[in-house]
Length: 151
Image (cartoon, rainbow, N blue to C red):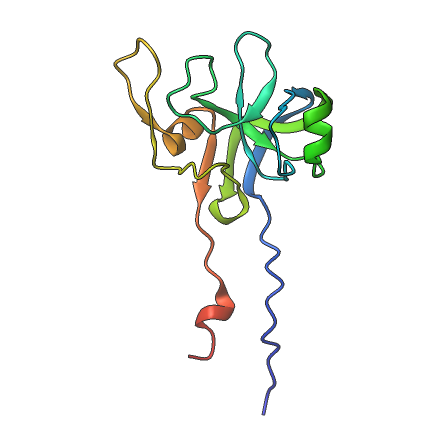
């Protein structure tokens, strides 16, 4: 009789396939009210006035941050560091032609991938997921084989 290991380490990679267009010199904008760390896989937006990144939260923002710009792929940044000032030389995936795991991304403040982005003065409406697709970032669900094995 064969014995199967039923452990599940939940190590789903962020990038499932493709060639990401990435940079390692992005600046994350200071957030004086931040209480949680910024984690790997967070969907980011770009502030038009500064060019700095900030977590994508508000689909109604008029400062450029209504549109997702990329995905933060660096080490966790503490809330204290973000409260203290801008954080420089941060890595991010900003496009390409890649498929990423829907389970490995983080949307902050209850944002959802199917929320409609209402960009100011534009009749065009996108969901967060559609806006990421326009940048060459495609979200895909991952099926946990352990969940269906031996049933």
